[in-house]
Image (cartoon, rainbow, N blue to C red; front, side, top):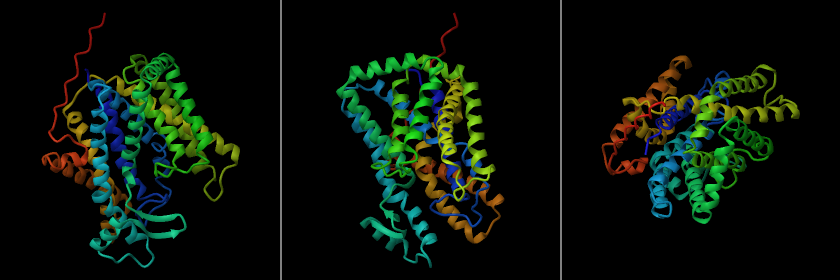
Length: 399
């Protein structure tokens, strides 16, 4: 089976953007675990460049990857779900009890009035018992244990189970739906129908359900992420869909950039803010534009990447397996480095780039250690024994 190097390339880029985004969260006015003394709105328009589509893109990629995994295995083989659960739940649990706790500790140190003075050992004893450490207001508590940025693994596992059940209970229906989608999304529909769904979901649900990443009450996020995961799975082998994205990539990019200009223009250059919100009609228009921007950015990225589906490189072969461990480590590294750098009082124009460089350096240093120690590999989503990525098949001759 030919490996989709374009999907690998998009996955690497998406997780790289995620690292940059979380560094940016330290410097913007939006709530996060630790905050810079220089935090403000200056970077927020740049952050909005990826906010609408970054995580939806990862769920499409995950759906495609799941299709390839299932194609290699026997769909009726229950061991697939067991293996997938091992690859997702073990890193999630390890992350919640080992990787994530420093984030919670430093958040308490910075947020508790007067400081949080317990030792890390005492903190961990309380963390392992579970419960609320500190509540700034009713419903605004630092909870334990928590998954923080690892919520993606919990959602991905849940969607994988849902897909597996659908394939077990209604395999013919799933095949029919995949064929129907492949036909409808092999032309301009590749842009129009996913765009319409995401816009409708935002219009109907974004105002009613705040993004929580708590799994059980996160209905707007489920309405966007689960369909994206299923779309990736159902259309993974639909050449017509991917070729349509390639044909319409320039249109998609133009629409995405126009949507981004509208969103940032209204929120940051028109006098509106959280204190002076735009009128309801304009807010609904922004939600519509958000959904349009969301899919068009994803479509453009896939469309341009598809042109490189057979282009391999040593860098891509190194980065593809590194993505998962880097993702698991990165936010804890950012929080620890940002907190540790505060006494240095560096100017943000120096501190920010330095934080980016040190984060990537620490994460890839961690990956180099993890991949060499068999007992650590499964804890970070790697197979116990490293596998060589297959070379792409030679492209067919024209004519």
